[in-house]
Length: 551
Image: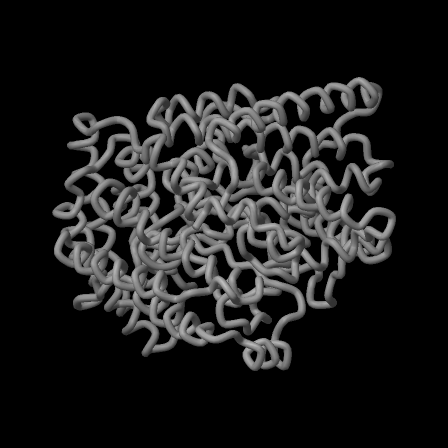
């Protein structure tokens, strides 16, 4: 669940890293590089530097003229990449080529289809609170006081907010109603955040009071402008069925059509519900644990869950877990952007209002901790240790999204199948509830991106089809459906990534027969890096039948 959102130019970067390739191994790979591979690496470095928009007086330039120049520059990069012949390269280098190609196509999709600077008012988030794709340079609000030079830099960024939002009004020539309504909610949070910053600065850093108030006023004015126009905007905010299918195949490198995704998603939803009902009957005499009530109880419970989980994985020889993967006592409960609104009561203030994920984690957190600790946290910790020139970079444009979410979600059901929850019947029920909810997210994304459902219809579907703990207005449903509208592929990514991983496991297992070892499989999968699973399959099996359809 824990996602690190934001990079440049409406990017979602979910970094995750391979296992053991760094240092000498990287040097050895360079020495063995085929002819032309160095040209790929040089081009890739140039492209990565090119991706962020131009900055003018501290404001990213998303004007039509700037974006036209940017798109023309991208097309030159794509032509240069097409001129590199990788056909005789070893598979690992050809995989790197495909990663570069997918990221360039991701930027192409931004320019050709999504155009968030024109269509999505929520794109102009001036604070980095986690509301999905956002403008370059969004401000991370620090805890005051900060050093004098840092305060001066923050003041300059706050003073750029009014101009950024003035330009946003001019750029939003094709704004969509659903996206505007989401932006109105987002901007109210920003208004409150800037107000809280000004109040805090009055006590701890007076030089920031006036800039924070100017940013607050600009956010409030932008919100009022949106409220005045949203009713007259086209309702749907999706990319359209044909564009969505192109994105799945050519950016995410997913070898399934949207219709195949729908069929798989519905079947998995039925399977999760059936298994949940079997578990509920089996455990009908056992009460569901009550949620913890205090932060101290939460921290103690999470520490035990994390330690149990890592010990199980290590002792069972399921996957190599390095020593740097461990319980983090400072992590705390995961907060959605709405919960960072200073006007809201504290999480543990009575009476508690727990959203869906907290209803699960505050009772037995093992399934979600599997998702987050040996899932996303492991990926991120590896990311900091990978020095490979292509795979060691944080992915752009959600190219690695299905790999990251697929691995994390795979670990949830893994807990049941591996026996870790054998003596925790209610945790098994929670696991299936989570799985049903993950499957229930697939149809809303497909329908929104095809412009068949509005955000409101998609939100209602998710709430109605989640079997437990989700009511109208639930923060998880609010956040999920916004993200799946604004970032295609995210809602389907959990399940389709898991399906791809399981398909690869079955393929390798049948090829290796009785010699198959699941720990070796998991380690090889992770060593390939944070890249699309279709590319990992090519590298692990030598089969390019899927990739040939994606060039």
